[in-house]
Length: 119
Image (spheres, helix red, strand yellow):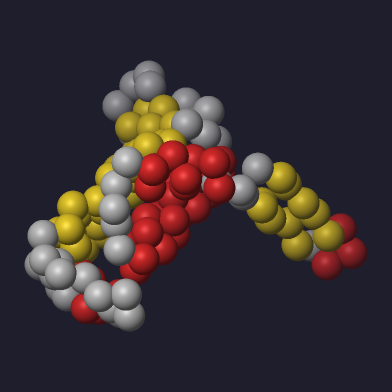
């Protein structure tokens, strides 16, 4: 993760590279390309959330749906250690859209501090 700042424009941000973690996440699974892409996007979201919130603990980004992709979960901590999995229960074609993958779905973000109850 690389932080950057454009002082003259009051802009700051973070650039995250997750390629090694992403490859490990996919290495033992034969996920279709659209599922791989979505897992990558969730991985980046979880990574940026853990860095932005600046707390000691875990963040879980979880997508549940009634579509072929029943579940996609990424869990990460404040040390940028990430893991994830997807559960596909029907055919997913290479050109499946997000809507075709998840149908009616929900995304849940859970923040679990190491100490305290998070209040």
